[in-house]
Image 1 (spheres, rainbow, N blue to C red):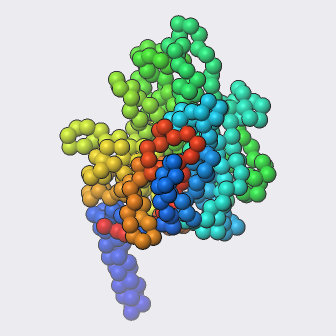
Image 2: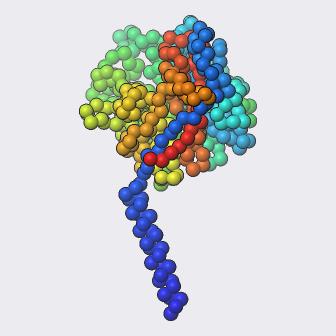
Length: 416
């Protein structure tokens, strides 16, 4: 009898615990997180022709431009970075043109997550450099995103090629090479077992992209437009800037991307594609992602999302570039969004963001012109450790041979 009573008491106790847990999840399902930057090891060099930051926490090349970097910790205990890099030749082009035509993906490695990355080599370039000018990624590769799933590594990237001069009288006849390549951007992935395999070229580079646009809607100056009356999908004309995350609830992989809309003016929109595998096939949804409607009815545009799953709160977070300051509620910078399912996103009750500035070792806040293409190093629990961001001290659009770089910013995470 006493044994039965003890069993009943224990059962009731566990029921109470379960109810309290369910109550807590129901009314407090997600908390806000605040990402605060810590000092990085860098020094302003404002005396050169192009002001830059230099130091252990900066990946800079004095002869080439460097953009976003994505980092992962390897089985060897080292930190492996993939980054976009290029120069202005041929043609002595400015930044806004040269990345479209010449970007390659470089590789760097460090013993530390937030400093001392050393450039090893170019690991991926336009396939025309290997003799294939017809491949979908023949011209350029850009914006790498490295992930590890099921003990394998996956390097997602943007690729494109020049489809050539368009026939006279076609909607794309007036487009120059730069814009033809820009309109042909798609997303690809390479899979490899180890970084030694990658460096030795022991990986498969698929002949087809992982994700391609379903619609090509634009009123003029467009290559291969969709039939008149087609409704533009989020993956309109291009798919770029991949961010991939695993969703534990249904064991799916979510691939976020940006497309271009013209309604009537340009704006970037984001979508998501879903798959059972990191290498697809991915099914693209019609939902627009990350478009947050503000109280005045206007859409707060975002770009360059990095999405991760935070085990502590069983939800997704995204860090995005906020063009206008509508998401931060203060000024343009890097804003945080959150989601329960990875599809429907919302702005935190109290906006949290990172300004376009860095904190130097003497605690001086140094303003920069660009702080974008955010990528994070995440621990096994989903807690952000380091922010990697494309940066420049002065506006980048007219830069040619140097002046843009990647910085590694250690983070402090607090709950709100």
